[in-house]
Image (cartoon, rainbow, N blue to C red; front, side, top):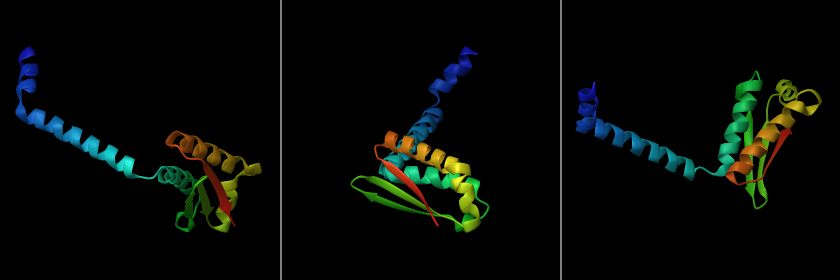
Length: 116
């Protein structure tokens, strides 16, 4: 068993493989750094909304960045607006809470609105 571990440690191909994985992870982190904070929040909102609605193709998000923060406006089919808003507005309130929590984490304030 010890010889197998030594073979792995001495294997230059294994070292190269680990180095390639490290470079891939670094490249992913650089991509995340280039992405605007509002894009991450918009991706989350889009994922949640698309999971709720029946007509995914009708969903669109308009993301507006300004000095105060980010405004995300959701447009969807009329039949699906009720699903996004929920009873007594509970669903949209939850979406706003999640968006604001992620926004705070990435350093931006977020407002989410559903357009008719």
